[in-house]
Length: 243
Image 1 (cartoon, rainbow, N blue to C red):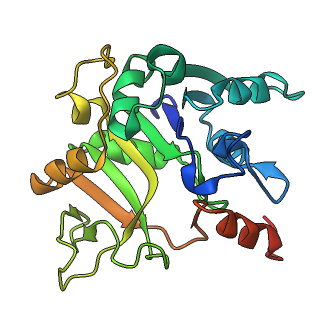
Image 2 (cartoon, rainbow, N blue to C red; image 1 turned 45 degrees about the vertical axis):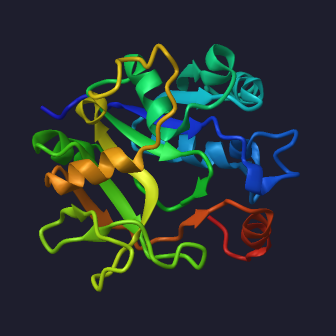
């Protein structure tokens, strides 16, 4: 019997400083690519894979994200919100935000950032089942390095393990797409539910797990953009390709 679909967390709490002035009045996940908010591309892709139970963390202008999904005429996904802005006055960074949302998530969950554009990615139950059957703490999708991150983030071994390589390594490094499958166990060093609102980045947790051989990865060859600046958003919207 196949496993039941798991939950997915979309990270949507950031201020989007590099996207100003566009994000002064609009949260970055609601900025539109090809006429559709970034977060909708994610929600629809997840739904195509059967994943309609979502967790969204919010801070900057988070009420707009809740209103956006609440006003949809078609059946919206089932969304639980982790309101970092209301609870702590601002975003808790990546690991802090995930730890805060853990009570809303299961032992295994999808994770992705609300500000990347990856229209062809397929979220599949088969990927979940493979990950759940193994002993890894995370499985990451890596992409070729964009111009703004030429040295990449992590290496990839022939055995499928993600590698914590130094920036000056002779081995190639790739960029983390922000898409991954995670186990709750990766965050066990932090208080469950992060009741104090500790701010913490994700990369150190991943690197420590990589050093112990507990993170796997694969390359994703399809279109991917970190929509981190107005120029990148304009480039996407001016391109002729449709999805």
